[in-house]
Image 1 (cartoon, rainbow, N blue to C red):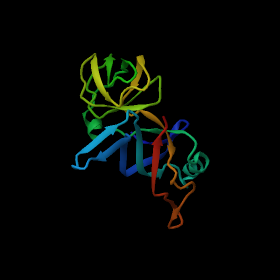
Image 2 (tube, rainbow, N blue to C red):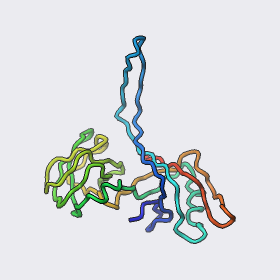
Image 3 (cartoon, rainbow, N blue to C red):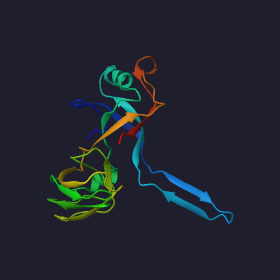
Image 4 (cartoon, rainbow, N blue to C red):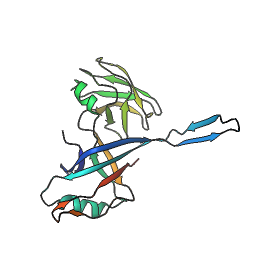
Length: 198
């Protein structure tokens, strides 16, 4: 499967290594006079991806137009890269459904067949937030822990969990809104940063 920038009905640019998918959770920390550290995290969370991209059209005109027209304000879609260990271990191919309440860190799964490994990126059909599984799940039905807590309640909604997990993102502020050529032919914009839009 190709993971990358999705525009319309196809991927126009593939993600390249090195690739970092980072969880951003606001944390407040302070040190006391005895140097004891106190930390507190907020329930907010978003994914941030840093990667190179490889245009999938000769001349890279689709990626060039995408960079210029989307800028840092427009929302677009990417196919979320799955962890290599997840890809090798997963065997679940069923169209599974899930149920859970707001802020819950687990969901009730139905209709599963095969293994959904821990660390699998998942998304529900009724909202755009992307989650990861925090334990292996191979039962036909049962409870699957996830991170972060559910932002929207789900009730029998489809769970995307293979190479069809789409995430709404925008370019970070320092991404080049244009193109750079290497050797006068090859388009190279360096590393881009994509921010999940909540």
